[in-house]
Structures are given as C-alpha cells and as structure tokens.
Image 1 (cartoon, rainbow, N blue to C red):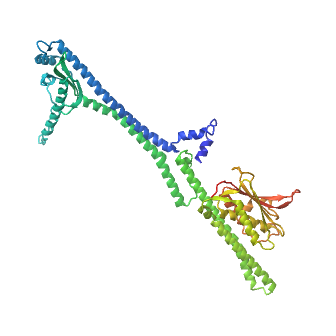
Image 2 (image 1 turned 90 degrees about the vertical axis):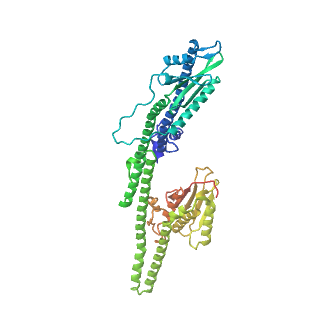
Image 3 (image 1 turned 90 degrees about the horizontal axis):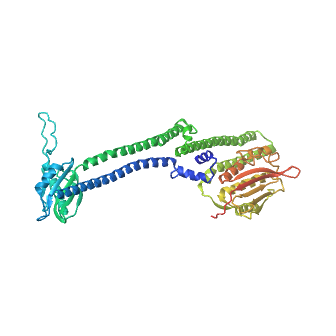
Length: 542
C-alpha cells in the first residue's frame, strides 16, 4: 500500500525505471526508519572517531615538533660553546666544565625546559635546575584545623623505584649520545612526569667531548589540553546519540505503543477496526504497519459480517423446509384419503432431500476456506481433470438426465496452478446447475479453450446448457448465497442456492473469474445459459 502511495505521489517527470532506484536511495535495506537510525548513529561515531584521529595526529605532530625544536636549540647551544672557546682542541680536545656551567647559568634558563651537560665520561657537569635561583617543589597546602589526622607519608619505595627507572632511561640516552648518535625520546622524569628529551653529542671536529641534554616537561599539560579539546567532539556525539534515541522514541516506540493500545481497545470495547489516521499517513514502516492493521481489522470485520449474514441466511433457508415438514406432519394425521396421504408423503420426502442437500452444501461452503489454505497449489491439467469428470457423468447418468459432451481446443496447453479437488468441485457444480435447467433431450456442452501458449492468455472453460436462461437482472446475483429466483417450470428445492456461490469463491481464490451470460439466436431469443471460467495459465509441471 505504501508503494502505491509513493508511486501515485511521485514526480510526473520521473520514469518508471527511475522510481525503484530513487526508493532504494531513500530506504536503507528497504527501511526508511532503519536508514535514519543507521545514519544518525553512524554520524555520531564518525564525529567521535574523527575527533580522536585528529587529536592523535595532533599529539604525534606536537611531540615531533617539540623534539625538533629542542634539537635545533641543542645544536645552537653546541655551536655557541665551540665559538666561545668552551670546547677547544689544543693541546688536546677538551671541554671546560666551569665555563660551560657559568654560561648555562647566565644564558639558558627557559621556562619549562631543563638543560644538562655531561662530559666525555658521562658525568654530570652542569644542570640548569641546579644553577637556577628557582626553588624546586610545590606550594605548601593550606593549614588544617587542629585535631585533623595527619596523612601518612607517601610510598618511599615507589618513589625510589620511579627515580631508578628515570635515571636508567636517562643513562641509556646519554650512553647512546656519547657514541655520537643524536637521541630524541619521550621518557619519565624523576618525578614521574613525561618529558620530551633530546641529547646531542658535543664535538670538536669528530671527537665527542660531552653530551648536551635538553628536556621539556610540559607533555602532560599538552595532553590534558588535548583531552579538553576532545570533549566537544564527545559532547556532540552524545547529543547526536541522544537525538537518535529521542527520534526512536517519538517515531517508533510511541507509535507502536499507540497501535498496541488501539489493538487492546478493539479487544476490550469489541470494536471492529483500528483507525489511526495520523499514523496511516506516514510513509515508513510504522505507516505500513498501521495501514496493515487497519486493513486486517477491516477484513476481519467484513468476514465477521459475512459470517453473521451467512448464519442468518442458513437459519432462514433451513427454517423453510422444516416449516414445510412440520406442516405436512401435522396434516398427515388428519388426512384419511390415501391419495392425499401419499401426496403429503412425497412432499415430506422432497423436503427431506432438500434439507439434506442444503446441509451438505452449507457444510462444504463453511469449510471451503480451510481446504483452500491447507494444501499448496500445484500444476493441474484442466483437460485431464475435465475428461475424468465428463467420464464419471457418462457412466453414472440416469435416463432422462442431460448428457455431458466435452470439447478440448487448447493448442497452448490447459495447465493452471491450483488444487484439483476444489477445481473439480467448481466444474461439477456448474454441470449440475446446467443439467438441472436442461429440458428433456438436451445436453450440457463443456468446452476447454485457449487461443495460444501466450502466458497472458488464460485457460477458459465454458459450460453451455439449453435451458430457459438467466434473467438479465440476475446475471450477477446468481452467484450470491441462497439465490432462489428460478424460472418457471424448474423443480423447486432441487438446488440449495449455494452451488454458484461456492464456484465463485473457489475461482477467485485461484486468481480467476467466473461470469454468467445468455446464449441468443439470430432473432434475439434466449437459447440457454453460459457460464465461463477463466483461470491463469501456467507451464509448470508438478
């Protein structure tokens, strides 16, 4: 139903080939709501992932830039030491530790950085933290009220372990630099903080006279700033997820709850149908569900009405022969004339037969739906089926009953998809109906026809009789249940009025149609009735 509405409201400039593609683009996996949910959640994840990747790249780039900056500073300082004569080559290459320490104290104390100078033996010559006037440590905490328990001292063993690890990492870096290999690392300091460190050998020509190490201890602060920068991305992703959850609640959860409440209302208030117009206008799965529920309940309501009408018609039709039987029985004791008693007995027998046929047809009609849904359809050859039915009539016909003559004209085959049992009942009902109206000496003609093997051409079965025909105003009403208007001269009570109704029900269940018409002569007179059954053809074999 939703597809039909979408097609009806499509752009008139679109071709029929463009519309399926457009629907595939709009609907993810055939689901509009699924596409919306997927897009929103994917968007939030992409925002978070993009922010994390961007910050990781920024982190790596920032560390590399910091190392490059320290390397440039270390090279500059190493060159200055050589130009100032702090490193000399005569009489032997050497490093003046006192001059180097004084120069570092007076000239290199940048904020957040630390410079250390080592001699050729790896011994510390100068440390900018040792020669600076700054007092290391952190401010004392605020005074506590009297009586406050004193916190236990820190874990000295852990502090020693941290110090040992820091000295070991620094020693390895100095040792590698003394071999003439510049070093750039990220390691832990004595206080446990991460630092960016660059160690460059100090040379006189090719001789390594010492190592200059520069450290920047603001890595943790930079990472904290990065985490703070990631917070907006996380908040945006959270907001998108919250929006997705809200939309799921508004467009999925609440409508489903409304549909559930409407279904409960149908159950509790004995209503016949669900009607939620605002949901039925939606073009997603919720709208499809609302329309399907409304259609289902309307179908059930129509079926209930049909059952009620059928029950009322059954009661009415059964009451007629029962009334006749009761009247005949009440009169039978009062009649003394043998001829009249025999006449009443024949009336009783006729009404009993009429009642038996009526009950049989009612039973067949009531279980017809179950029989049609119980078995799977298969390929049925109507030519073979009708040949068997015509043969049965030929062997069982009584004197005075109209014979059945079968003509098969199907060069394209006569196979249909269906169930041979119900289809056989269709043609038996039509033949019985035609024979009941046929005069003495007439015949019932059964014709199977299909023009060619084109899949669009149905298989047609035509049943002709030579009876009085059907009144023009009743060509459609003859298929209604308990249709009782019969031409004069036909036997009353020989039919239940359900045969043709059962025929239409079975034919429509097989995707076909059945029509009634009158055959006329050149002068316009009625020669008899004609019933035509058209069923979709199939080339498959079971």
